[in-house]
Image (cartoon, one colour):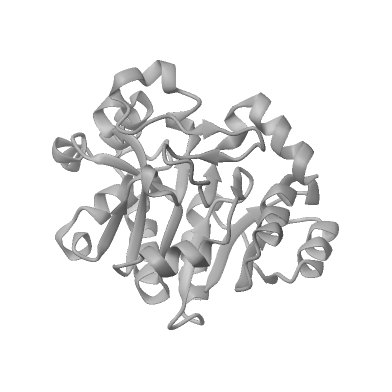
Length: 264
């Protein structure tokens, strides 16, 4: 199993919660980071923590560049299960390997943001203007996060090159459309039968941008409950199970402060 991330310009303190929480989780698999223009102390820090580093050159926005570079990198990871995540706003509360080995049933696992596209103003603008033809049906689908994906390496590789190409051909060149492209793709016939759509309450990841930060804004439009914050600082589902991954914690200043205090 491989954890795969991508960063640019980050200092060690920017990625400490991510790196240290993986250490604390007991995860024993390989850890790989694609890096662009990062300081030497970040490289030294990651190497000291056992990360394999691959350098990239930014020829376009990192959001797009990472997909084509990781596509090439994934060619060297045949036969592996890859855990793809954002870095700066992610922590691990448990070893991801245990949950994945128990629950993975299809080649690609997508994780819910607990909101329907048409009910999220940002998604209406981003996806609706990027892919107006697909929006006719996409607006009624649940949004899944492109920043947390688990997949067999061969399938993730092909998904990434498709996200990259779709993002380049968006009808709106003024905004990044990787999230919209990802959601269009996983609902197309060639992908949908190999994608396992995972709800928040199954316990792998909570996407706090919707269910926590905007819980009052979205109200009853949310498709799943707001997580619980326990005394020990862990975020749990309604069964009291700690989520494996907490994503977008930095959008809540108080929660971010607690997590930074714990890991830095």
